[in-house]
Structure formats: C-alpha cells, structure tokens
Amino acid sequence: QQKVQQSPESLSVPEGGMASLNCTSSDRNFQYFWWYRQHSGEGPKALMSIFSDGDKKEGRFTAHLNKASLHVSLHIRDSQPSDSALYFCAASEHDSGYNKLTFGKGTVLLVSP
Amino acid sequence: EAGVTQSPRYAVLQEGQAVSFWCDPISGHDTLYWYQQPRDQGPQLLVYFRDEAVIDNSQLPSDRFSAVRPKGTNSTLKIQSAKQGDTATYLCASRYWGGRRAETLYFGSGTRLTVL
Image (cartoon, rainbow over all chains, first blue to last red; front, top):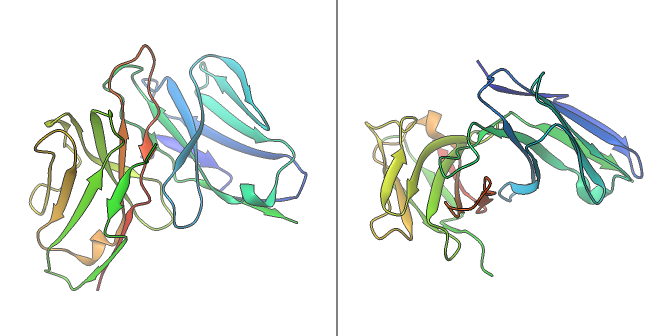
C-alpha cells in the first residue's frame, strides 16, 4: 500500500493561475512533510517543508498541513510556465538524524502560456 | 557550492551485465542516500549511510545490489547482474545528520539506467 498518496495525477493551469496539489499519508507515524519539484532530466529539488499545523508561505508557494487528517496541500499562486514539472510530496517519521523520506507518486503540473 | 555529483549520466546494458554508479555528496554532508526512481513514479529508498556506516539497507535487493561508502565521503552503488526490472533512474542524495530539525535532502541529477 502506498503510504503517501498524491492527487491529482496531472494538472493543467493557465499562466497566472492557481495550482493546487494534494497529499495524504496513511501512516500516522509520518509527521514531517516536504514538497519537492523535479524538472525533466534533473533530480528532485526541495521547495519547502512543513512540520506544524496550519499554513506556511514562501513566495508564490503556500503549504498547508492538517496533522489530524495527515493531509498536506501545496498552492502555487501566479503559476509560470517554468513551474511545469513533476511535484512530489514526501514524508518522514523523524525530525532527527534518522530521517528517511517516503515519496508519493507525484503530480504532473503543466502551466500553459 | 557544488551540489551532489553523480556519474555516469546514462547507462545501457544487457540483462546479466554488471554496472556501478558513483556519487560525490555535498561537502560536509555526512549522510548519503541512494534512491531508485522507476519511470513515472516517486523515488524509493534503497539504502542510506551515516559516514561509512549503513543505517538502513532493508529495501536493497541484497542478492544483486550492493552499496559502499568506505571513507564516509563518496559512494558506489553496484548491480551485479542487471534485470529489465532494474530499469530506472538511480538518485543519490545527501544531507547533514545533525541539526535541531529535520534537514532537507539534496539530490543529484541521477543515472538513468536502461536494461535491455
């Protein structure tokens, strides 16, 4: 069973629009979440982490975490064509050295000019 | 600052052949990970090290896969007898073990392996 599930599988938004990506964990041990972005031919790059309930904003990106439901979302405001990529949600049990990330299958985002 | 460096960039081989992947982590990062990313899927952890010690290799197919990090810096992942099912991108990542909160993983660009 996939412990980190993402939706939708793919998403298309117009340039300047809002993109919303979702992630849910089925493992209550997962308490720490990251969003990673992967452009074609590159390795994943961390966008942001979120460890506490509520919102966390970094520039055009806002993450929201609900620990009770283990649901985390990522919202991209004013989407740009360069945001077109594969987005992964990743989760971990630990906030210490024993941190190994479990990734979801990803959401493909396409931003059209 | 240099990122995580991996080589080769691509590898194509026949079933039964051996292949090695090499990784140079970010300077100062004592923790190193190897992930396997099949096409259209998320990365899946194979093994990770702190310095030269293996912390977790429970997901490494031990009969054909091996990984070493002898001096706690560079690392090599080897597949002894490749199968078509091993076709994937192999990603190396590194981070600093310590710190008050969980540290972000930094990934290399990966080695894309095709087994014919």
